[in-house]
Image (cartoon, rainbow, N blue to C red):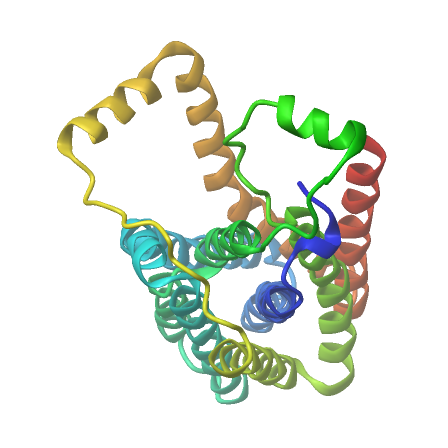
Length: 306
């Protein structure tokens, strides 16, 4: 994964800002839905309230995830040919629009289709999947373009360098640094958003998340250096695509692909339903702090495994 210091520092700021906004808004929105549906339902009809809230959250998740699938290949080509900055900027702008639309949704009780439309805008911009892919692509290119700090001139190091065969191992670009930046945002954002939502209101949290996403757009435009695109990617041939599909259909990779698809499809639903469940039993601040605690536990678990 490379050392933390190998990751471009300005890229880590983009990663933190995006996922801070994404996680903060992502924790508060399910709680807003739960509160709205509870206000509409009778006190003795909790099951109906929960079912309706779960239905809304599933539709919301699909409104964001399905467009991501449709634009993923296009954004990947843009990243290959134009660099990662346009993809990062577009995804951050889409998230800003999504979060900004939640402000009148909360203040003026806008209908749910406006939230679905806002999620669709974020999905069409690539959302978090595009940010993750573009972030790693940018870091890898930055690492590959970095000149060697030194070369052995004499002694055993020089002999070992001459004798060692050349390798084409890809540069990691300080992936550990990206992981740390993402983890910090995942740990900090839910708790901060939950406490802020209870203290100053849900609309203020969404406005702050929109501001953080816009700040990421400005940072990308003015402070993030362009990544050097050294390759000249060619259009994929039909034979290459068919070969890839054949590899995917082999017994070994087929099981992994199915498991990954089920996990990816299940993540959004399970996360929203879990927040919905917690929201009926805890305050907004406690839900956020609890989710931040889960993120911290995952971080410590990964640290131990390494």
